[in-house]
Amino acid sequence: MAAGFRGGNNGMQGLMQQAKKMQEEMEKTAELLDDWEVVGTAANEAVVVYMNAKKIINGIELDESVVDPEDIELLEDLIMAAINDGYAKADKVYEEKMGKFGGMGGLGGLL
Image (cartoon, rainbow, N blue to C red; front, side, top):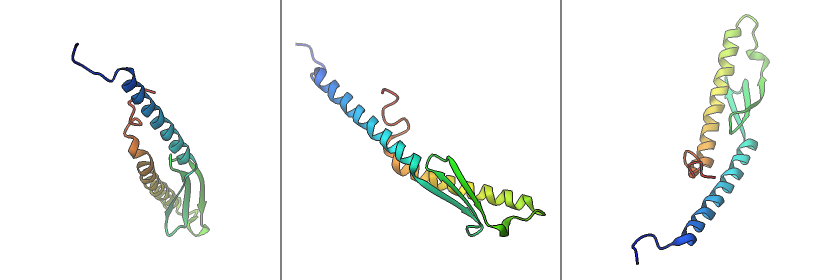
């Protein structure tokens, strides 16, 4: 009898079932991230940016106190600061939820 892997198809089937289960869990988590609201702010919430955990921006609110026609550059900077704040928060949520799957879902693109 030759030495080698004795698990046969049962071992491979188990591995494939595990991979499929992980893929399904990853897909459910990815859907959760679509609906997860992240709020980025700047200037004590005078600028608020709403996005999901995948960094898709779906709203911006501006307090009129930051809207100065004489200083558009400040408003642009505040909007960017709020977006970057939201992105940092989204990265944290994404890492918390998807990090357990590794870089490519832990499957290396097999499924």
